[in-house]
Image (cartoon, rainbow, N blue to C red; front, top):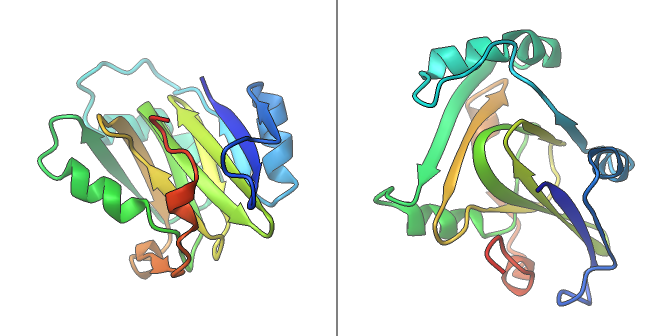
Amino acid sequence: MSYVAVYGVASPDTPNKVLTHVEDIASTLAALGVRFERWQPATALDKGASEAELIAAYQSQIKALGYADVELSSVTCDHPHKAQLRTQNLVEHCYSEDHVRLVIAGQGLFTLHLDDYVYAVRCERNDLLVIPAGTPHWFDIGQNPHFMTLRMFNTRQGTVPSVTGEPIAAVFPGLDD
């Protein structure tokens, strides 16, 4: 189930609120300039669909967003570098471009740090999340990851994270907590 849990920076153990309705998640995040939507593919997707078939199933929606390029990102529990990938993403960072992800399968926890609050956004299949450029955040794939996303961007340089140096990600709950 998708949700957003809102924490005060000083209280990482207990969220102030947890929202599970798509409309509530979307409106809470929209107030922060973050876009959250639930997309449906234009065509049915088979479990073994290729990257091209996945992109084609969402092509009209992707085109409407206006990003120049799309790539598939996938990590499962048998990925040989899953622990390294998890560790890399559990450091607060930001991007020079919007960070755009459409979850095709599985789940992931995107955690945004905005002023005195932290917003943990659990995304699942068909969730689109657009995190504005410069927004500090981290991403948890979990100890036994299962996710497949389409990542949209304008330039390769915009996909390189800039680490903030803040240790905040270590004190907030992760995907498995």
